[in-house]
Length: 507
Image (cartoon, rainbow, N blue to C red; front, side):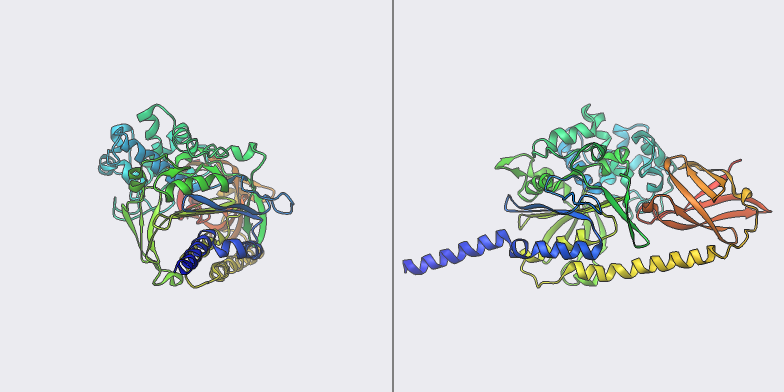
């Protein structure tokens, strides 16, 4: 009987040890990543996995910059963009725990000058509304103005009054970076500490996230960082780092696989790290409590596995194969990343990539989750690529079709100098269109690094190819009345903003 009991104990030990170590991670991940990086044309990636309060994996794959041999390691910094939002949600939840604020405080209580487009909405907006994207704006609305711009944090917040919401207040979800910025900027009003210092002192330092910084400029100064890459028309290019400090509470965190693993341990282990309670569980619980629904799962890939999607305070919260799954993604020009944890399984996963044109950062997350939950194996990298690639090919075809029209060298209805001048949008400010030897070009007052190169197609329409690959190529239209240009409508890459912005000619 003792012998049999020993066999059972050995089996239990081997099973639980295998479960913690994970056969996919130990036996298959390296070759999986080698194939996936090649398939997606990704120079490099970094992966962190935690289980039961311990780091199972913190590892880099590939290289920091294309066409180099400079490998990524567990300490290499990536821009993780909107994965910053959970840090801001946690910081404000902590202030509520300390009875310094209520998440249901009206924003006007702390920011008397705050103003939305509609005065009635201004009176009602709470901190919670800012943190769960229910302001009535369309997803990404205003990011054309704010993203990587020369606007200050205060100017971005003040500009809410010029953004006309697409939806009714609290009627539906609309992802809003400026909302998170506004919420984060309540912290200095309440505590006297900047958002940057508060997050560093209350979260990064207690979690030994020594490589991490909420100052995006670290990517330019630190020696162990990745370059970001964009794919434009099947060509991979290094792109400049986005300047996102002005949106800090929404987007400015830079971190590594090893550092983010500590954050994931704390999240997946009820606020504990290294055996110590560094965050009250009730603080974390508030951040994952749903505040608005995003709808039901529409993807056939996860039919029967995922159902209802909701949003907490900087986290997307949903079910996955009968478990609670808490996750978020982040994207800046050059990088897409994801973080995720399953609290009931005490699992945490982060995947960082140094291109902005892939879904490996999500595919690998599901690959690892399925391996821990013993779900049937599906190669998510190949599966997602099969869904992504047709859209990429369509974009290339669309570009070639537009350029074929451009190459016909048709003459515009008006001489080109009629399209020049200063144009103004109340929310954005000014753009200037000038005539050069190479044709018409747009200069953007809020984005001095950016130029739009205009190529005539037909009527009063031009194909605008932006100087930064991340901003894409879009058709723009001039409105003409009685032979005079009255306005121009500007559109940029959907990854930045879905909206169109009309600029009226002012000279």
